[in-house]
Length: 172
Image (tube, rainbow, N blue to C red; front, side):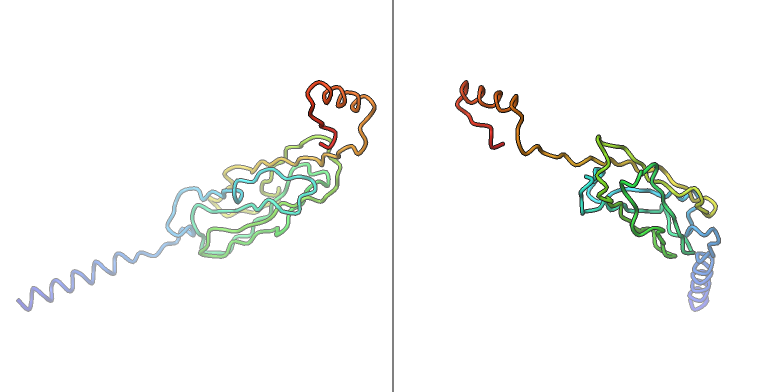
């Protein structure tokens, strides 16, 4: 009986040692493409030119790496409308997430809504099997300036509506 117990202990020890395999892939054992995913907090993808609240972009890897990863991002054709805060993003070894902010420059130059995308900078140097899954698209909407004094034509239209319905819309 003593020999059976000793034999069982030796088998268990051997199984334990062989289960601790050293991983040299750099992706924590993950062997596929380690994608960089970009998303926004609360799904916010619209920014007004006068917004003080940024679009918070979350950067997430499919699998953690054994080394720090530094990622630089760029926005296409910003024309001074928006910029990136917290760029470059460093994802520490063993972690999978990081963040940066897209902020308005309050330039007031847009006349209509404009579509932009944020992606890796052209000079990004990525490790093997690490790539961006998809650029993040967002919209910047211009400031709407309200007229203080209605024109004579608008005043006549509002007065005609008031006479016809009894509702006064001039304060709106």
